[in-house]
Length: 439
Ligand code: URA
Image (cartoon, rainbow, N blue to C red; front, top):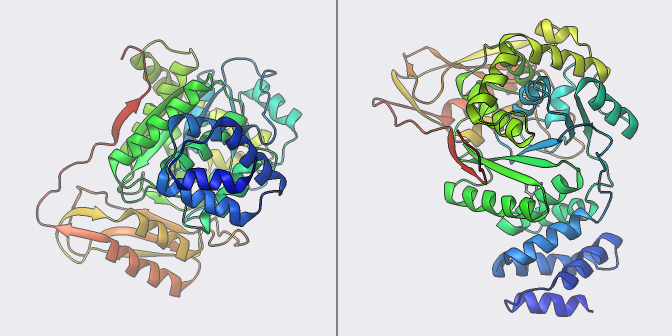
């Protein structure tokens, strides 16, 4: 088999066989196929697309390119959750203790990632001392003992995807539906869960700006997961404005804690309940959505979800006192209010731009080597649809540098639109794909 023939076949619109896809993935991972041939194939895929069969074959080949995690030593149905990412998306921080408190074992691999804030692991490192450097035995032991453990993604998890994603990033071939679906699902399948709940975002702060594209991605991923024998459900949720109010690592941790106390923002709380109920249903802990939501609400009301967070933080070396006293989390030196220039309704908050404000303040990584400032970010005071008076605060910037605070404030203001007319509401949950259970 020759890589040249595989590229030519795809370039001309042919369907690659499972063998040809495996040949490419194995050769690229081992280094026998060079970057320039892999780039040519990715560009051919970008233009010619892949069939459902090809996408499934690419996913399985990438999933098997490294370790397939064996979680059978963990008791119960393991349910993983994945978000396609967005601004202020701190869902894993609140959701994992909520479902763990309801008896779903959470054995999760998370990332750091580039972007406007850190990934889940960076956010968790706001707890002084917190570490994700767990051995496999500690990881499994913690899940069996307290019901929750989160570790960093190992180099051996889907290494083909790691190499290919980095290549796609610099060859303008990221935004292809089959390539995104196979990239995400290869890691999820290799991470070993029995069931997977996907949060696919749509709107100005999401990968998939248009709802129809988010829907197509969700359908593709659900098909891949189901084909691989994992119960898979996708929730399509709005990301046209930041989720909740807080954007920035420690600020988001604080908001997640508030949510576990039952005092979280309405949209964020609703998303946790929507995703959490699908996790409980997939894990056999509820038979109807209503039952699942009630169980999650009870775990918040009786304090068991908050206690679960404290146990988890403590088990991974973190200072769990911060769960009960968030003033112990990193705090920025200064705050700056962004005042509304007019009276009316907030009709738009361009989500990507709010993310850029956080990045500008030092809350995210521009390159893999960048160091994150966990204390900075911004907290919205108004969401889309809220009335606002002239001079009233739209947001508060948390910064360690006055110059950057001013720049972020200007940029945030430019991202907001104030209109005379109340804007139409965008529903938070757009659709659920792949679900079969009573409401
Ligand atoms: N996230 C991934 O893991 N892979 C992609 O291709 C896009 C988003």
